[in-house]
Length: 263
Image (cartoon, rainbow, N blue to C red; front, side, top):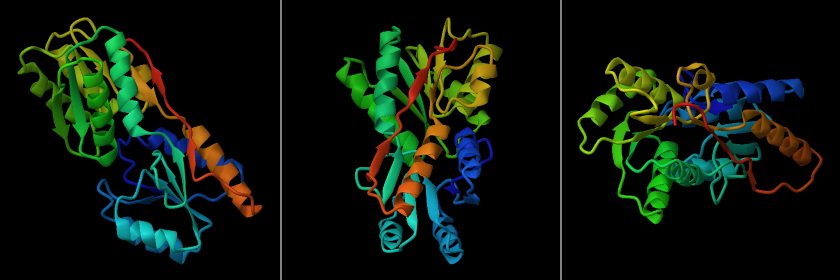
């Protein structure tokens, strides 16, 4: 399994769920880190192929055309997870980040918010969600939302940086859409320190539905990705391939908006 990072990562709960399901099915799972910008991806693919693994599980989509073609040419099974590209390397099990952004826009519009502030880590996944949000928000009649880019991977401190950017805006946003629950947590704590009540004066929404989202006060509204279902689909795919059965190239698992106190 190749993942960008695991320190304060939005992938942690999903990866843990996938390892649990795959291990229970009798598989041995190895994890390699590719870096937040996939700078070590090529090297880790070399290592995986040299060990003659049964399958390579990618967290997200490989954007490098040469690497994609190289994997297509190799007999090892390649499964892209946490995304649903139109043209998978072999098989994709995941969801559309663009659709997540669209659903988020509809959700906050339905809840009465009108001045969104997007905190966007500079990863392809978060940028795609932001694009989906902006597209849907315009279609819903909203004005262009304010954006605050932050580095990737996301972490708690970026929430504090994002809050400082927010307080200088006029008019003040009424909802902050954060690229991860870590960012949402940092922003909420900074808002409370400044005397701004969440959600009374400012609503906050995260992404990833990490365990902290339900432990915070207020609890954090977030997007849940079912890591167990991704793993179960992966197991079914590997079993069907081993039996010589056909497998669809794209297997959507969807996502859920978990409405809690913060929005």
